[in-house]
Length: 386
Image (cartoon, rainbow, N blue to C red; front, side, top):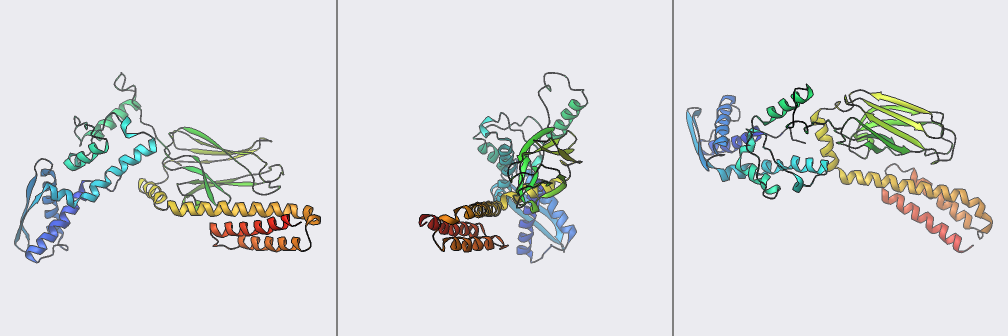
């Protein structure tokens, strides 16, 4: 987990905006359109940021910043922290995310290693230590060199040069960055391989038919985190044909997702009673999207969570209504002789109203629920008076 759009330059930018406004207040000059002045002031802001990691106050000075005007202003560590409070807070989001995704409680973390020059900022260190309930941070490694150390160790492991107790328990595993699955009836996404599953992996999920005597089922393969498949990425699709004709829900169709170490995805669908199968192979399913695309899809899943829940509930209620209509249609003929005169006509009218509700494109979950309840009331009343 990480935020590729957050780093030391963002803190510099906030300082730059602060002092740009300060310079305008003091001199009346706006340097926004002067690249050279902005560049010089940014450099001074970066130096101030570094200095404030070891002292509580410093001065930003730039000679002849704009039209011969010198600039000098003091800034305290407390003011620097206030200016960047929102960014500091956001640094903990990837930490929370990686713990959540790996299902590890923060109390189980043995060591917290600082990576990147901005982790020298006292406020960042304090927030991180507080997050881990006062745990001391590992500072023996130079934060600017930590990534290089890790890359060197991983390189040595991959080339077989790392042999010994110090590295035998170290292993960097690739994971599936976004869930992989298929589209079900109603364009609902059915995940088969959850996000962050280590590769290589093999996962299975059982499906069935939605119509009587259905002999072909399409398997659109998607990657993403949204309930609505149209919000995810279509990787490919294939058909499983020659399924023995049966009633809806009777066939057992198993979808098998296999991702190898190179990120190649093979999806196989098998009809269990006959063994008939079909498959598709998708190259580079793991690395098809950029890190920015992946981060956006994950954040969108959180952002639109309530919207996705409503989409899922709408489909669920629609299925319930369709199922109840089918049940009543199948039994109304058998019960005809047991109804009082006119009762069957009322049920058929209610059935027609319920089926009309299914044809409304923008019907909500509540609309489907009300349509089902209305039909049930008519049927229950007819059954009670027969």
